[in-house]
Amino acid sequence: MIEAIEPVVTQVEQNPEYAENLGDGIALAAGAIAVGLSALGAGYAEKGIGSAAVGAMAEDPSTFGRGLLLTVLPETLVIFAIVVFVLLL
Image (cartoon, rainbow, N blue to C red; front, side, top):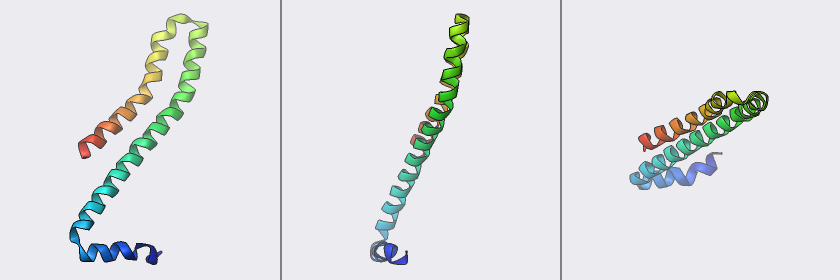
C-alpha cells in the first residue's frame, strides 16, 4: 500500500502546490460521492412511497395530493445535498 502512494508523496515534497490541488480534487470527489449517495437513498425511499401512493390513489382518487407530497419529500434531500455541495465549492 505504501508503494502505491509513494509517487504522490514525492510529488508533494517537490511541489507544494500539488498538495493544494490534490486536496481540492479529493474534496470535490467527496462531495460528488455524498450527492450520489443521497440520490440513491432518496430513490430507495421513493420506491416504497411511490407504490403505496399509487395503491392509495387507485382506491381513493382524493388522496392524490397527499400521495404526491409524500412522493416528492425524499427528493428534497437530494436538493439539499446539491445546495450544500455548491456552497462548499
